[in-house]
Length: 333
Image: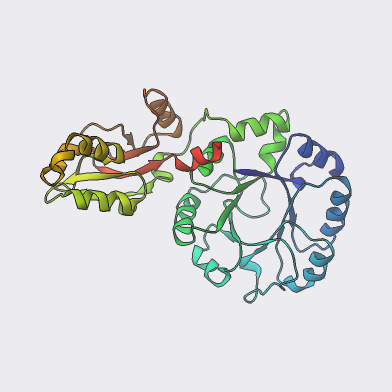
């Protein structure tokens, strides 16, 4: 996940010093907030004379057309317009360069993006826009998951309340980039803050239930009437590498790709007679929905094998959802 440093969140230094510090620490982008202030482009012109870092511009305005010529004169790599301020559907001229994004606040549903589906990304405002140091609203975890399911080829950017723990969860969810402002500048140094944003040891305040894939979106198969074809179909359609097995609506285990492979190797001469129930792992590693991120990481570290997913259970040990680490693995490559 890329980190976009919010340049105006540093209240104690000159702009050039802030930008130089962010560049020296290899922050991925410079986030520039424009609250209907065209003079922001004077700063962009200066930044271009200092460095070649990508600029991530967020414009909040009721009159977006007055920025078109400025964007032509001072092109940026990413430009985002705040949805709630737009009086009408915005059409950005084709000659304006850079990726285009739509920013929405937490109460705004992701369907706002439907009219902008030809744009490149959505920016989830996870705190109140313009309010530095706010807390991340966990409702945005659900919105991110829903958006990525609806628009799998679009990027998700996040702004607001991103600390070390939130950063870990966002990386796990496959978020493209996050804006960091007060968190970057309130600590001892930008370098220390960046380490906190990318470290693997997390102090938790969010629960697994805040960001897991919920049960209704999980691959689940009923043990009764289970066949090899049904098992393979459930794993294939779930695209997670395994399926949860239930009996009378209670989780009794899982069947993974590895479980199927082992069963096939034992029954190559009589696959048609193979009992699918023999594939069920009745004691998989699981995590409780009320557990914290720190507890989840401790559980993963304690295993003697690589963990790429975890079934999530409730207090009655029934399936509540799934946590997958696929996006974290991709992010390490």
